[in-house]
Image (cartoon, rainbow, N blue to C red):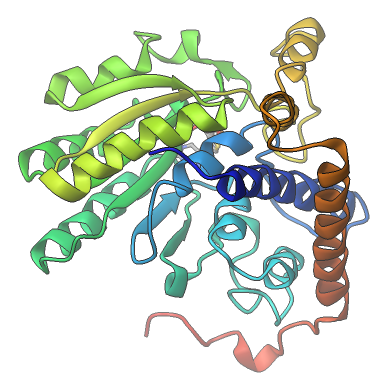
Length: 321
Ligand SMILES: Cc1ncc(C[n+]2csc(CCOP(=O)(O)OP(=O)(O)O)c2C)c(N)n1
């Protein structure tokens, strides 16, 4: 389970890629190159990066609408993701998904889902398909704590346990569903305990610590792959930005003091400090990675800027008849 030096550095690189890519998204949004809804993952990078390090090609990943980071980590082309956010024809879904419905089926990234909670049922379905076909693939399903009171989530939990499905449900508890604190939305705050009703393996983790995320999610992934059982993980995180681009970073629902204190727990800076203390990374390597990512991100923006708008003739393509 121990990660090699290269794997540790790769965790840093991937978290930094999400961070810089999304900072560029915010910039492009304010320049009106991106329109509509746009939810940033900044602050929560460790949960996606640590979890995705624990799976293998062929596995399936579902998430909600805070979905730019997952395909980036799974190897989707950053230029095509940025072009998708711009709504251009060079986008990963040819400009038809926008920010919230990014999908890259070839890489097992099954989206990008905007209706809160519903994709947990789709994830259970994907896990059912793997089991039915005798394939050893597992499914990771990410969602917010705002989803856990939705009926569909409980239907998915029940089916997952009843049918022993190889799925890991990862609730990213960032404390707020839009502007509603979890205390005002959920009868219990220890979200992991919602797995009790279904006797599902369950625990919470520090979702801001990429190494802890990797280790704990790996255990659940191994159980799913080897024993075909689901797990429910509550990853405690904090989003540094507003709910979406139309919400200021600390808004009226959380105090500036809380936000500032949480920002000091930056998962990327914390990983660098740990790796430099352990002699795995130094300032020079950090600068090299930053320069490398800067080029990836500016190339992505250039690709999106140059990508044409979809033609009107495509408007009726890719829809059910
Ligand atoms: C079924 C449904 N109800 C309401 C909404 C409106 N809505 C969009 S995001 C959101 C908050 C969800 O919060 P959470 O699940 O905690 O995810 P986070 O945004 O914190 O990542 C709500 C209520 C929706 N998209 N779908």
